Image (cartoon, rainbow, N blue to C red):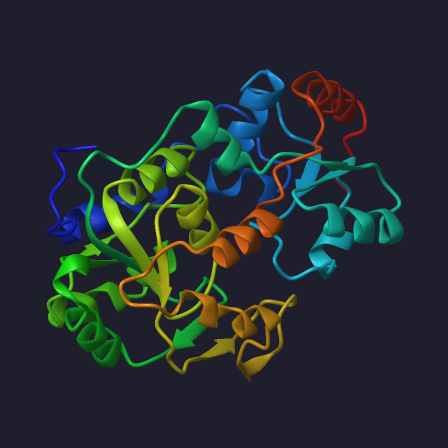
Length: 307
């Protein structure tokens, strides 16, 4: 990454980082998208010491499973096995799936620890992770309002910047932040195998993180020792075509909102309760070894079914 400033990326760079034509997909063919997103497939191969040009005939959790349920796409696929990051999700999968299931380390967190990625010596400001759209679902919220809130944060939390998901670069949402004087960053295309490096290279430079929702960024931040703050704001989604979510207009009903008040302090500090909550969801214990994962991935190659 170029020399870092807290003034955000240029429009040109934002578009390039999220451009599907410019991404590095790696050497291996993709059998299932979910286990390859966010550099997860690349990290699975590294953890298992598995060739980087061979496919992964496994399915996996999307991010951190803080809603303990098995989604339709997790049931309806032909992958040989399922990798999950949480013991509670593991029990649900064992009950509902007729295939091998394994508890594995969360790939991005394992990667951070394995490679010794930490905050820089003098981090600055606040990186705001906005609730985001996807290719199939749009999110609606008051961007002017959230920008005004960010600018009113205390001096200790300045400068502020927003980190946007690639869909909100593609759909032009980033321009509304720029119009309101808030710098914009992105970790880029989620299918690019460099995503994990881009994400952590951004995260480690900030003193605080914040969001008007919740997501894996909350857990990645606190796990790394970066205080996270929840800025309460109303928003809703409109689902056009994702069969795993309610159709049309809907609001999130996650129970996690009930605990986000733990993260409402200004300036934020990591409390014992927050740390305990994050450790519960991250659940980095009692997972299969590198050798065991290697054997699972090798066995999976002999069980490929594309139809």
